[in-house]
Length: 120
Image (cartoon, rainbow, N blue to C red; front, side, top):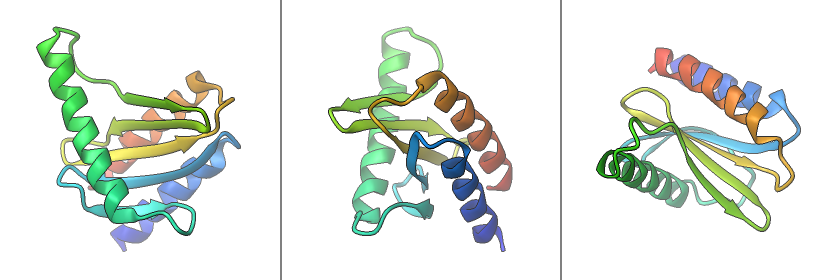
């Protein structure tokens, strides 16, 4: 039942804008909780990388006195990977198009992360 609610939240996030291509909810241990990813993507690899990057980003923000981590953003030539905490136990990872309006996506991610953190 809870898994269905996670899945629905991710699908709602993906449908909120055409700029979001995929999303996943991952435990801080790197285990996939729920995903709305395209076929062919390795969920185990995405989970491990997302958890590691968010952890490293959090440590970097603390060590460099930047305050609490808001998100980790990776920009590639084919788009963005955005990772954000979804409560203390999970990471929300979103894939966005290269011409995405990041401000709107950040707002959608924040709302989704708040919803998901309440479900966990």
